[in-house]
Image 1 (tube, one colour):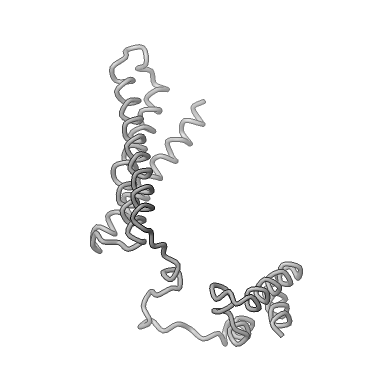
Image 2: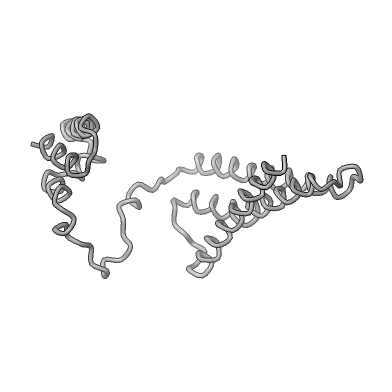
Length: 181
């Protein structure tokens, strides 16, 4: 029954039938082995709802909020794992910051390195330094405590803006460097 439902849904969505057969087999295997991570949440009635035309698929009411099933899979680390992961993330952040500071200092202090093409390298180092200082520490803390944001709603918005801005600056600088070369 599950295979038939998946095949109907695949034809309706225009998906390759071999991919649909593979999905049906995986779901059936997960259900048969008792793996509640996949098959426990997939039922045939759910599959029937997914194969209905979009106009008849029930909508999630706005009062339901922004709840997703993603939060159910948040990792919870033990003490030793937290210390090890925290040490590695801290080391990566420090190495990133120190390395980019060395690039900026060397170009600023050595007269031979003060060339227009090296200014682009300094710009990239400053963009990556901003990622190391404004983004990486907060991501590390959030990952270590299980994915919960503890810094407040306002700073969440500031953090997202800084993350996008710093990473975009780094990417755009790489694009300019590739054009320059």
